[in-house]
Amino acid sequence: MTADPINPIPKVAPVREAPPAVTAMVQLIRETWHEVEPYTPEISQFFYGMLFTLAPEARDFFPIHMEIQRGKLVRAIVNILQSVDRPDDVAPYLVQLGRDHRKFGVQSHHYEAIGTALLAAVKRQLRDAWTPRVERAWAEAFTIVARSMQEAAEADEYPASWLGTVAEHRRLSWDLALIRVEPEHHIPYRAGQYLSVEVPQRPRLWRYLSPANAPRPDGSLEFHVRAIEGGWVSRSIVSHTQPGDVWRFGAPMGRLDVDRQSGRDVLMIAGGTGLAPLRAILDHLGGWGHNPNVTLFYGGATRDDLYDLEQLRALASTNPWLTVHPVVEHGEGLSGFEQGTLADAVTARGAWPGHDVLVSGSPAMIRATVSRMLVAGTSLDQIRYDPFALD
Ligand SMILES: Cc1cc2nc3c(=O)[nH]c(=O)nc-3n(C[C@H](O)[C@H](O)[C@H](O)COP(=O)(O)OP(=O)(O)OC[C@H]3O[C@@H](n4cnc5c(N)ncnc54)[C@H](O)[C@@H]3O)c2cc1C
Image 1 (cartoon, protein in one colour):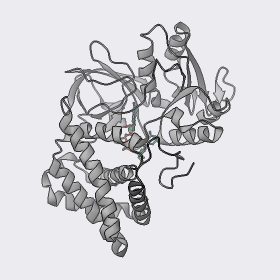
Image 2 (image 1 turned 45 degrees about the horizontal axis):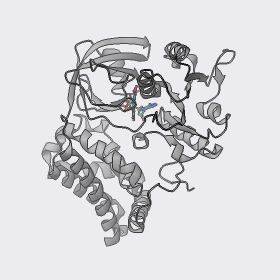
Image 3 (image 1 turned 90 degrees about the vertical axis):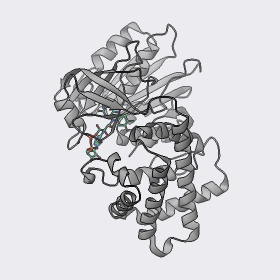
Image 4 (image 1 turned 120 degrees about the vertical axis):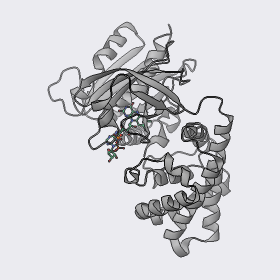
């Protein structure tokens, strides 16, 4: 097992080994990016300047105030380029990403412009270290990514995006809201997936949200949204969403799910609103008579963060396959709650052999929990989370 300097979650060897040339290519990208990463703001500024010169209409893909965007896109692309040596992980993600990007109206010449601008921006920062070999590595990795996304976009039979009307907005606490949306047309998502969402109060600031319910006959979706301090979109959703608002959605993404036929039990680990996709999976399982045993650890900083605990307990009381363990970091004297982090609570019980493990929550919580579980002896093959969403 090796620790990846870019992504602090240790990796085991990929299920399908990448050819040595691809491994070498990714290694070169990692090394050169490591050199210039501290200059991400400068790289981003040059990148956008060149992109909007090559393809002025691409400006419409981004928010009006570009400073909100900061280094997000450059970092996201570079993260993916550094992952092309993990074909089993990255290939399905690129298919979903290519479909999702149809919502912008991205055409093939935009991919070319993005690649040209990125390479030029990194080259400018790397100076003499930008050798023909380095250029080939960056260009080939970008081609792999862009081609996979374009092919997926072209093959997609669904609309580029969906509209839905907010039917209900309910404050669950001062910083948390439940929003129910009724889409115009059925969105073909699977329980456990997430969607990119644009709300009218924050045009072009797309954010990911996970429906907290399995697909319903009426197509309606429920979201649990927590207002993040200083957050542009989440605060606006929690404070200003109103019935009648029209939301826009991109294509469903993500790989959290439960294989009911595998014969394996399931361990779910949810931090805060990371519960939403796991709640959707439980909702889906609730429709079946026989299910694997599911143990859910649901954690937060304080008791108030476990906003859905009563409903989960009610679900467990009528579904013997489900056990719920609430965990709080600060809850001295609270009976019925374990104290500590989710990583503490889960690893205190060993390596969870014979279980499929689903982890959902903030990037920091996912990193900490997965790292601790690997140290405790759980195999990475057992664990599922949405790694590319860790920005
Ligand atoms: C796959 C996926 C599914 C998601 N599902 C949900 C969901 O169902 N419900 C939900 O409420 N959110 C969900 N999120 C998070 C959501 O997409 C936004 O990132 C979050 O709402 C913050 O957006 P913002 O515009 O308010 O903050 P931004 O303006 O983007 O960020 C403001 C500041 O807050 C920091 N920040 C961003 N997110 C967090 C966080 N989670 N914890 C602490 N600091 C943070 C940023 O680094 C930045 O410094 C999901 C994210 C992913 C990747």
